[in-house]
Image (cartoon, rainbow, N blue to C red; front, side, top):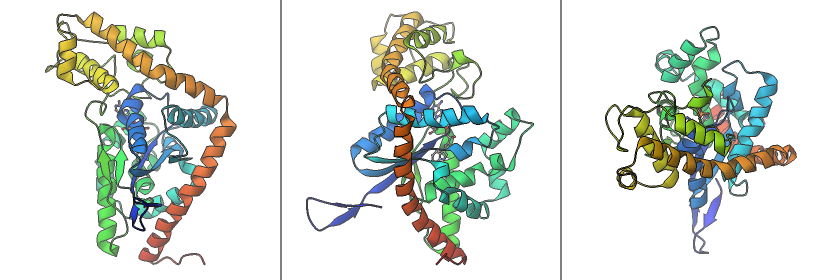
Length: 345
Ligand code: TYM
């Protein structure tokens, strides 16, 4: 990708690539923010990477969507991304469907992805149980499209939550398999997963991941929730019958709250346990609600501003897609040549 001049010298050094996407398939959650977006911003602001961040609209089609709602969700996803601190001057921001090379490489990678390995994907198993009347081919081959997203840009690091680790592994396997047959074509990507935000659990059923598609609104904190809603949801969060604010076996609810508090404040578990020594779950739930409300508030306010300025979002995506497409085409041409397709003259 772009080259940088180190200390004004002639020496040119290639920056590593960080890439990640988010699906516009429901209300964006605290899990999305703490598991992914927050780290996208940290990586962007480190200045050490060339970053590409996008809304994975094609992926969202694997589940039946209401077209009007989907369109709104796509804009909202982009607004959340910008409001969280993704800066289009520093990162390439776009919609997946605007860069046609994603679908094209996905087709080729489908031919290098095995039925058996796709059958083992937990997300496929979960989603086919959940949407039993619509187990479509796209849902099954989803990981090949995700591999294409990543491999098109010779990505080094993919900041994601824990739930995407298996998809990253299959992307690496596909890259490895292709490289093994044709010689080095793709960079093998690595997941970038942080400790505390990696797996934010449901507030209602803390053994389950906090998920955009959860119909129980009390289970999830969304980026658009008001301060009062956030505090109310934390007050109602399911915990065990104990009392001390301490991590422990079988204390899924309190473990999750400590994790959230840690991800939001940057404090370590031991420090949090000391801070709430002698206090009950009620006090801790309130404190969690307050720190989360403070984190979400400025993002929510900015999302609302961006949603009132869709022309600006369109403009950013147009530029982003044009830039992304240049790099994507470079890889796609390489792949076409390797497999024996004739590149368009
Ligand atoms: P998606 O849209 O489900 O989630 C977006 C990001 O949020 C993370 N995440 C969580 N992290 C912690 N706790 C949670 N409860 C939680 N819920 C979600 C996810 O791990 C993810 O990082 N397949 C991807 C989208 C995708 C993608 C890509 C990601 C498409 N192409 C290429 C990376 C690279 C997905 O459905 O994420």
